[in-house]
Figure 1 (tube, one colour):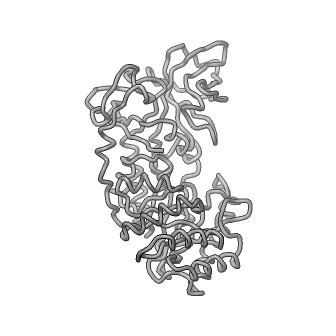
Figure 2 (figure 1 turned 60 degrees about the horizontal axis):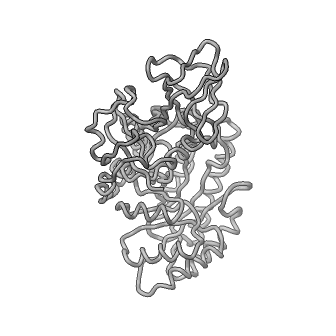
Figure 3 (figure 1 turned 90 degrees about the horizontal axis):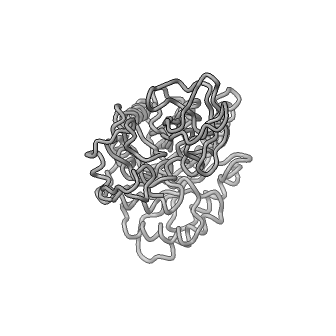
Length: 419
């Protein structure tokens, strides 16, 4: 794997003040993020506010190393999707672990990543707003060493990109585009080989643009690893591979570094198996997995193809009320934790580690989680429960910072988010 350049302005974030604006901070306290590790706080001692989201430092390190080893063993690169966490500190760790670049979803993400020194950004999306295109074109003109790639799936999209590039004077390297392949009832992406050839032909006819490769996202095909889903994923990846071959045979791909990219956090093993043969055609195979870094206790624990990943993210919350038998109300809700795929998973008590088998979050409101509790489990008002998270992409954007813990639950730092 290629070593990425480390962001250069992490210090700006480390000096940020944590105060009343930040979930998890004890009310009335203010401190610089860089000084947090010196406070001697421990989550088990109740030193933080509630609810509080925390990251296990050792799990993050293990997950970084596990994915790095997978990529090196299989001869693929990774551009982790930054939208999962949008944290400059975590971006720095991913680049230090050998990431090829970082993935973004929108021009705003690109601006944040460039601000912190990332030099190669893969935008896993079409860019069609004129302001965003003009800004990207301007950055490529200002800094010819930047590498910003984005998707096209229509002739109209190609024309918008070409207009943005041609609107600025001066010589520059061509903007590198990736042709996105989609699937029926999915998201964006061409649906046929003829459409792919038409879009690629439009790129070839546009000064200032170059077609650097092909992209796809198999995660919308399914959310389990049943044989039927894996077969559908294989069929989609075959279409991605065949499109790359067709464009290469037609002479429509740039002779420089070619990219073929797919791979969320559920099927990157299949992506690796099916797309690495394209290395014989000069392709760099780039995964875009994002959730591997924190993993989770729900969706990705069930579907990850990579043993050894550890859930790093938890939410601690107090019990607010036990208003009737079999019911407990926890002090967090939709404002605090993901609920887009499934609700948080009760893990353990803070004070005594009791098993919470049979307890489940039934639904969540803005600030309340409605928990069903088995008769064998007695919860008291004020007790604190750790919950696991499913789908970490929807966890980070609910807070400016997340505390980072060592294996004894001491607060050793925090990571900032910039959504």
